[in-house]
Length: 314
Image 1 (tube, rainbow, N blue to C red):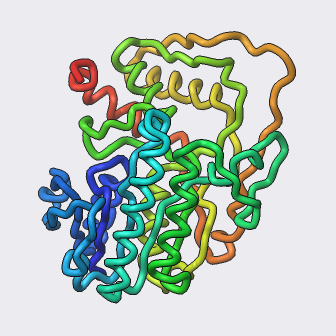
Image 2: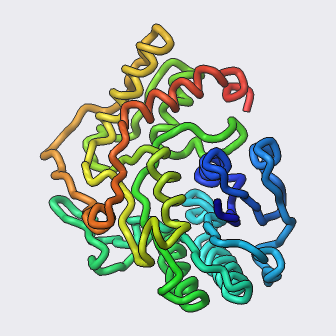
Image 3: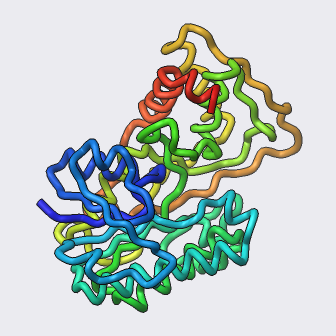
């Protein structure tokens, strides 16, 4: 079993990844400012490191792999575009430099399909060779971080996973990622009994179960699991926002007995056509994110029902 260093272990992806790694017998070390409680409970360890400064190679000593997740999210990026880009890229370069100095054999970086920017249009098929031209500062920061990590660690030791839209419960209610679509809708349904969309919800997205994301990120920590390269990480099957809202309604009806009311404008004008995130490059390696998206919605709904009071007060 490998020794895996995880940055951003206190976040949405990080929390679930830590749980998955520990359950698989890996030793996990988180580096960052505060130890996540789920890491401590699972028996991993934590080293206090300010990732915005030079990361000492000792923090990564003995690591077989590093999974780099630490970065501001898309909301923070929208609030401070220039600062977010600078911080994200600096942190990534620091982690990559330390990984190279510590002779870490594999680095996994979680990026976003939004690096494709204006190529994400009706009818498009997005492959890893699609031109990257991100417009949102979150995606700009991720693309520049892909490049920074490649410079520091080298392409032969790097796996970049360009993630679509993950669906699944966080490790704990304190993980503040309720701005993600399904998380937000499930939280609202549990607390208010409604499901609100700001638009008609006919826009298309690629939704992927969080269990698949952490499983594939774990595979990527070992060269035998996934060759070094850049991959799209999604389901490969588009779905509308409104269809996901309907899944949330159905989950709460079955799990809680009451179906939350959908609040959304009626569709108007021609419906947009789906675009597709091509995942054949992963599939060619025998790796697929083919989990049940309905089960991922159920998991999130169940979590929100169980933690309703905490979410209401938080």
